[in-house]
Length: 114
Image 1 (cartoon, rainbow, N blue to C red):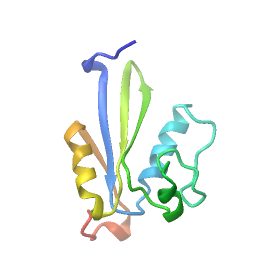
Image 2: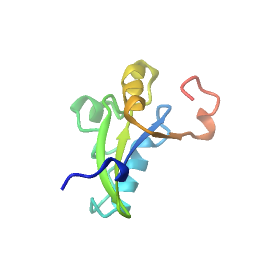
Image 3: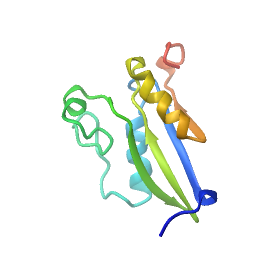
Image 4: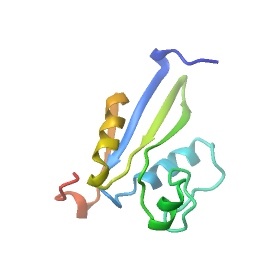
């Protein structure tokens, strides 16, 4: 059944490389009981990093989209790459997102990506 726009939320997960964006998305999906086990970037078995190059290199290149229910809403999680080399892909996510969750770590607070 289609979701009305009033019940739909687009959330972009953005931040610098290695801040844990993909791991956070895995945790959201796990907590929503959409997956039985959280994947690991180091092990190359996350849902977000589906491309063989991403698995080999251990970082996201392509944005990923996941849906999860929350109360009576549908949340679209948009997991973006962290390297500034892919800034156009990150901007594309922000165009369709109404909210962005910026993931940072103490070591990335002063980085140019932040």
